[in-house]
Length: 313
Image 1 (cartoon, rainbow, N blue to C red):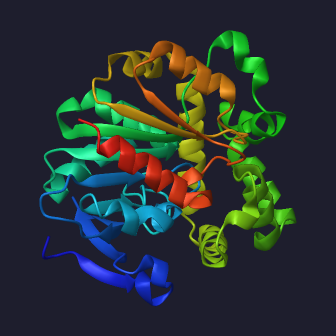
Image 2: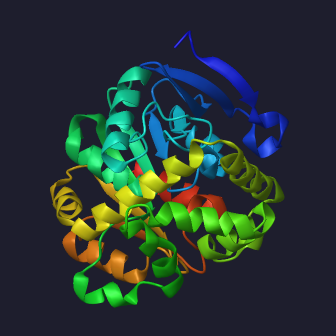
Image 3: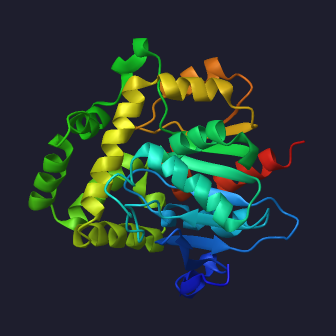
């Protein structure tokens, strides 16, 4: 990894993030931005995968804590954060699964604990199904996975309104552009935070600042909008088709922990109940009054749940 470049020491911004750094990893000619923290040499590596519209910094509150168990890497997926996509379809679900597999090889990690939030949870499931030899354990934080069709009416109205445009090619792009034309970045951040979190006030001021910075950067970088739209269209398509995801859930052999906040408006109880019915062997930690990004809103609870899970034989 000698050709990786240090670009930021996050410990200079907050003492909670001491030991967390940004690096640029060259992956087949693509400059991939990652958050990284060292861990014990005999620990199991951990790969952290963010969700739609997010970035590696969604995980920053738990990176140092997770590094107690082993080295940690959280990438910006192609089309998000600081990772410019190498081609127009690079942000879509199948390409991202291939990206994660290639990144594990690039890191030299034979096996890893893979954490995934929201869309990242979907990617983690598909990765574990495609490359089971690479995945030691799974930690799914509010994963974007199908529910039973009989309970689709339970989807939160705000979630439906936010994602239905992406079911029609081109409509999502127009919807996002129209929203950004009438809403300031600060207002968009407030609306997004209210949708994502049970209580946005639980987020540290430093983390809120990073969230707004990422949103502003997304408006300035021309490749970020098509990256977002491509990923969203692919995500919605995968959930509507559902068969591949359901089969992957059924086939996974890796021990799996699901961490879910019961105030989650995007991944509702119907999804979690459906997972529990299909995989009663998967562990579930439910966090009261927490929303869609539990590792950001309740990092101590997330770390405690993961520590207990990793301690199991």
